[in-house]
Length: 279
Image 1 (tube, rainbow, N blue to C red):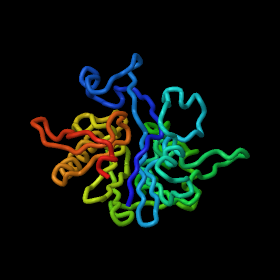
Image 2 (cartoon, one colour):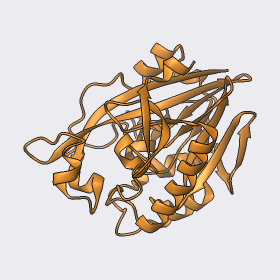
Image 3 (cartoon, rainbow, N blue to C red):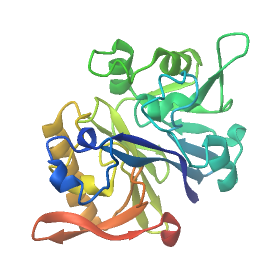
């Protein structure tokens, strides 16, 4: 088994949106904002190679939308999707499985590209797409709150590919790789939990996008059901504390991983490390 982590791109979003009801006077002590109140985020993907499979977690924004769409994302840096995979030792055709944590544009947009003559072609021609049924049904119905995030040009080609695998409930994708489904951020958010070398690694996705979101009340305005997010985080953090899990962050620009520890203020981040230090 082999685990790899790479950053597709950095981008920027409104800091208030990332921290919801937490006042700027508090969150700005943890994350620096620019003059437009924006903070920097990463967009990492976890690659799991096991038993002849190469499993990619999320595929980034892609490039199917125009300049106007990306005007307020301020994409910069990172390794790119193909570049990050190459640095980890893989080509797009090596990928056998893609775990899509959910179908917001920054997580699934890189699965397909536009054909010059029209239509779309897969970036990963040999991959099966794993999405929770709850998220698929929610995203394809769409809703006014998430309409700008659920884009038909990202989602429909996945459904039309003939390679969509809908995950009904928590369970194993394959040996040592299990999937857990959550509902606070968006119905059917799905994150991988990997057992490797005697440790458990949890790719926290948008359940806990950055290390600052370990605190139970620090949640995104993007979460549809913040009280559900709080309960889901609390359950996972208690388990992580008891079992010494490693949390792997998708969006934290500075921190890849950490363990957690008990403090007088509740469960908080322990030592911050690179994924490679655990492997």
